[in-house]
Image (cartoon, rainbow, N blue to C red):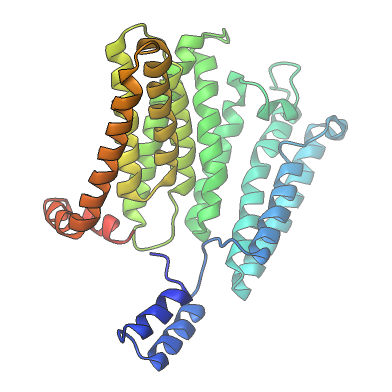
Length: 341
């Protein structure tokens, strides 16, 4: 629930709260610890600076680092990680939760670089690829870097419990799903296999995010990043499946409708956005392929749109009654999750 100062002013006008109560409530809310991001200049600076530092050691890594050799890369990575952990602890002690979470994320992002250097130092690196290819190409031997990153990420997320620490974990799970495909196919570019693995690994990530969502329902939002990359992987894999059957296309449309419903239920916009894209694609298919010469289709679609608006009016009128009855039959954990939204 997004409570604004304007909401409290309106409550005072309706005599729900006194002016003194509204002022005390505002002061109380300001004093509460806030580890979640906000769209203000301070937080923009936090995340912009953090992403520059993280990007420098990941996406924008240059070939110049190869001159340090395996041991040099390991040493520099560990030095940077020590500095990152020191800053994380200092910011945490001072109550700066957002910078602390970003610095912890920086440490996790260093893990694949350190493992890459270690493999070079031990002489077990399998080919001529370099570290900056890690974020560009799909290869099976990135698996060691990814599994190590997941291990470090889980440890730091468990220790510090900042939601932003889940971001590199989610990205790494996404990378892992693609590289496992390369391992299964023996390095061959099997497009059909890649689409299937993307779809099913996305479903697994969504299930993991839902489990995390339930477990952390009374805490911070630790599931956001897992939901994001899980939905991306699932939706892309599903949307790229080819079928000439109109039934399968309608099933695709129905799945996207379910995604919209789930997104509204869980208050997760990523489901709604991608579900809406899928539904729009299907309606476009009907308009330009199936009913391209029909004058009746636009009229039918208009009537359907107006009917959906009417359903929205009915839902607004009876939402609380329907919600209360529906939640009574749900498990307690799921009921508490929905009530916390």
